[in-house]
Image 1 (cartoon, one colour):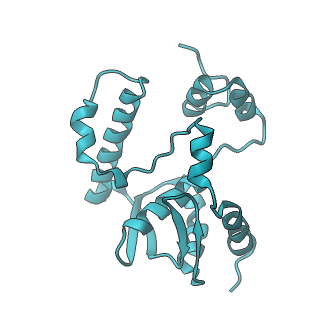
Image 2 (cartoon, helix red, strand yellow):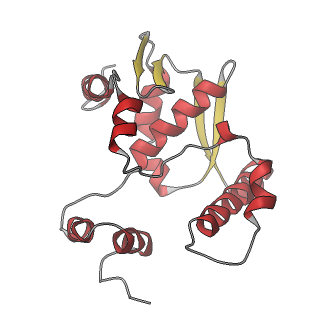
Length: 190
């Protein structure tokens, strides 16, 4: 098995191995940030907002990565302007959020976080088995029925460009980026 070049994490190396060769080159470029956390957070918040009937809060295990986004998350929560952006034919991002609070806890003292860790671990193992990256372990046919489709955020890239064009036609992705830039970056107005 090839070994990751110095400075690349195992995940980034695995991504680069199975992607286009230029992917490894871009990732290895000093100063390039491949942190997709903001996109993942936006997708997760969008999914939770769609599923929640009313106000909700999130309890997360302690994480330096999430702590990096704490102020931004609080700005999202505090934002009270009513506006909605269509992201795809099935998703949108709407303010104000129903999310009221994000707290970090010690997972050793939170049964809810422990259970969530077990569930995501099972989902990751099954996804890797289905993708052929791993073998053995949990049986995907036994695990997958325990999850509802709306519980998944599908972040697998698609190379069916016509289908992607149709799926994203008429979206407001550029407007959302501009809105985020104008309202959530830079010094916070008090």
